Length: 326
Image (tube, rainbow, N blue to C red; front, top):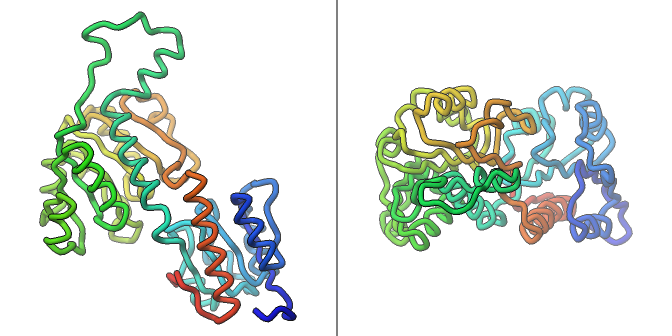
C-alpha cells in the first residue's frame, strides 16, 4: 500500500507470537487481543463491521450468522491450514476473501503424529502418571508391557503434505510398512520413494493396519469418516491416531469401541467441539490426549503467522491473496 495511504484496520482474534504481532503493527492499524480470550459471536460480528481484515484462528466459529449484519471486512486471514470453522460460502456471498496458511506446519504436525503413536503404543502417558503418583515400585520383567512400533503396519488416511511426512518418518525411521488410502492417489513413483503401498479401499487399510493415522481435511464426505462401522473394521490390537480434525472421527463411536476394547487404544490431538473433551476419554488409560499441539513449535507458529500477515499485505496492496481458499 502507498506510504501515504490510510492503513487498513486489522483485528486479531488471539495472541500471536511476538514477532508476528510486531510485523502486524508495522503494516496495519492493528487491534490485538492482549487478553487472549476467545471472541464471542457478538464480538466476531462486531469485528466484521469495524475492520478491513480479521486474522482469525480455529477457535473462532465464523458462521453465516456472523455476516448477517453486513461486513466491512474484505479478508479473513485464517491462522492455520484447516478452515472448516469458517462458513466459506457465506463469506463468498458477503464478498469476503478467505485464506489459510499451508505448507509451514507439515513437519511439526508429522512429529506429533509419530509422538502419539509412540506414547499410546508404549504406554508412556500411563507410565508417567504412575511414577508421578508415587506408585512405581521399581523395574520388573512384566511391568507395563506394551506394543511395538518398529516394523509394524501403518495405515495413512490422506496422503497430502502431512501424510507424506508421517510416511517418510515411519518407513525410514521405524522400518514400518506403510499403506495409504486417499481419494487422489499419488504417482507410484512418489509412493515408492516414500515406501508407501496405496490401497484401493479404506476397508482394506483398516483391516491390515496396526496404526491408523488420519490426515484428511474436514469436508461433507469426511465428517465422521471414522464411524462405528469403520472403527470396528480395525484390528483389535490396532491404534487410532488423529492429528487432522476432530470431526473426522465420530467421538461417541470411538468411546464405545475403546470401552469394548474393539481397538487397542487411541492417540488424539484434536476433538469434536474443542476445547471440550468427553469425560470418558479423560479416564481411559489406553488413550493419549494432547491439547491440539500439532503445530505448536515457536518456529512453526511464527511461520504460520507471517504467512497470514503476507496474505493480508498482498491482498490490501494488490487484491491478490496467495493462499486464497474462498
